Image (cartoon, rainbow, N blue to C red; front, side, top):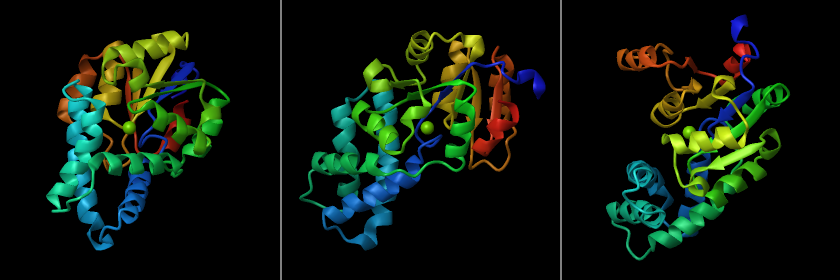
Amino acid sequence: MNSTRLRYRHLFFDLDNTIWDFDRNSWFALRETFRKFNLDEGRFEEFFASYNHHNERLWELYRKNAITKQALSHSRFDLALQEMGITGIDGMEFNDAYLEGMPLQTRLCEGAPKVLEILSAKYQMHIITNGFVEVQYKKMALSRLSPFFRGIFVSEEIKSPKPSPEIFRHALKSSNARKKESLMIGDSWEVDIMGAMKVGIDQVHYAPFLENRDFTPEESEIVGHSRTCTYRINRLEELLDFL
Ligand SMILES: [Mg+2]
């Protein structure tokens, strides 16, 4: 793949579950919060499943501007606790405790430190992330990620979450990056890949849990109609094969 070598100058990375291991960190942070509220640890996995279900659903509504950050923050816990028949705990208080503990977690996705170290010597690297400002900046600082990146673009700050084009355009403009020289790397097909594709930036879909990296017929159709280039990798180290 020599033809692609140094074709790009700017790498835009998603943060959660692309570099910072959100799933594992969130599990540990939630378990700590669960303990803090003196809840029965034997029921933690049940709580975790319920929380994830509600959190994903509410994030989708938040992305569509259908609910506020406030509603997202407490409802995800109110609903999970309610579903388990736990009363007397305020969802917002639970949320605050969780958000306080979350950025203190520092587990990174497999291969991330090595890959970032190597790529940062050759490319200008930036983060485009959906999340809350105070949380995302703290995560990056405590996980020692900040030095690798020139720009950190957080949806809450820019008031536009991925996959909407505004956040990508804002990131490109602020970084003085041309679309042709830019590559978006992220784990979410809908948010990172489709978002970047729509603004005309090439993309790498990081899909660690997919055994087969071939595109599904639906994905192939989308990729085929796009004027951008789409790659899929299972391990972050594979980036080094062509970057
Ligand atoms: Mg992600």
